[in-house]
Length: 464
Image 1 (cartoon, one colour):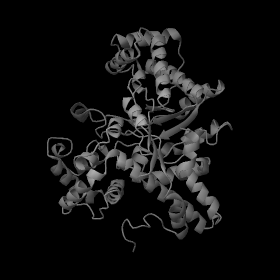
Image 2 (cartoon, one colour):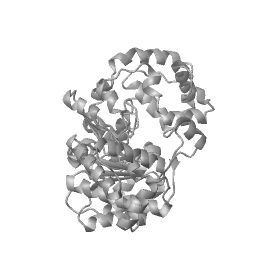
Image 3 (cartoon, one colour):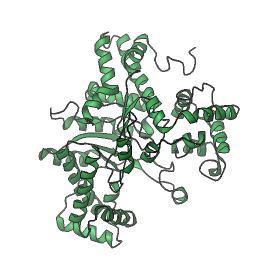
Image 4 (cartoon, helix red, strand yellow):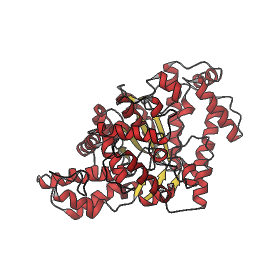
């Protein structure tokens, strides 16, 4: 019987161990998509306690605690920080076989050096040991500890990027770059969200916005602003891909109606999103950016908790819409004009793995290795089973060797062990194939392949 979370964790063969320890383990991290707050990086924040660094904002843990019967008072409510931590500790043993059990103990081990199993009985000991380490684990110290070379945050087009600039002026070893996330610019089905965004955009661009074309011009100005601040990525959180025919007159009407607080119909929303996304993707191509599409979440299912806590409260789930036709038409419209930028597509429903992987293959054009990427398992799929399915599907339908690897997609500075988790899983799958005689025992080549997937492919692809 193997021990839990030993050095050989998830590495089931000698070849897997060799690939991980000799090739994967030491690679730096390029975290090209996350939701880390740039102000906390620029300020080099030191966290108050373990709840502050580990539980606040972590909707994965919130969902588990609710499922375990914990009152909201002890999750996001008024309880003191240690009481919240104790309730999480009491929940942890009940998360066995949920990825939270692996992640939580990996995060306690690295960077805190804590190897106790977390439970209600060990809560106070872990709390005190973790808190004692926090003064040496500021945000910048954590990024350096995990060998993070590049962090790409997720930023609204109206953001000032002052914190990114502050880090650039006072470098500490990790580059912190912005990512252009213009979702609110397309929210014509929610006039309150859309109008708040347009008003703010007009303010930061000093640009009067009275028409759809005015909106486009202001967004283009911000796209340039992001580029000058080092941004080389856009990101789009979409329910499904959109591709609906439109005219300039229709776009202006939809825009004016939304400004007049009249929500767009579902079809009008599709038209508006199609036009806006196609325009932004053309800018991405012109500037040599990459673009990311995160598709498939059904968000804010629990309206009571949405009203109480706001978005990102842990009440989102996997959706099941049709994807392929609109995705194909969208990418083809750009490809026909030779304006399809480097693109990463992430799906949230494992039933779509083959759909997304084969769609990526349709639009490779020989200009960039792996130009269209079937992205890593994310959100509900960034766990062992989800990662293995994504890796196996990509292997079957494309070129795993050209994969740009893992990202955290997280708001937590303690989430970087997910890169280690991914690397162990990757090495285990390849090592198993070698020992089964399904791949040659060519360790130098396989080691290079592992290092490419863990680091070098992303470094070349994004060209920060």
